[in-house]
Length: 166
Image (cartoon, rainbow, N blue to C red; front, side, top):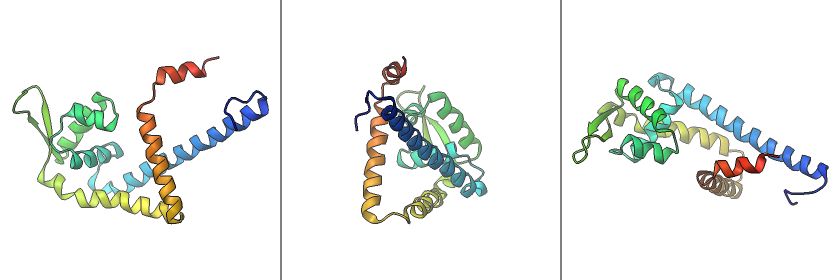
């Protein structure tokens, strides 16, 4: 079915389908955040802190700007979360050896000790969700999510907004 059907009924059906997909994404996002918050309650970290810590495990020594780029997040938002994680003892900031204006983010020993637990949080959630899918469907869903995530990072929001204007 073409997304540009001329009859109003077809367009409404497609829009309703897209709305339902958006609702599913929103439910998964909200429930995932809620689960991570509950699981990380003993560490007293937020969802944003959890996500940034996972990225730092993969990119230790990155600058705040590099982390923001990797997460497709606002630099000031990342700076606020870095400050919180530093205050909680998970990370420290060190001046770059070459460019003293740049601060490199490093895990503290305490932060490093949380790596296994923080990985298990997401493993447990995804495994629980995926239990209902046969392996071949899980492969399709995984590939689909990857493609959608990659495509979303290349979105030109201004162009897309122009398409919604009537």
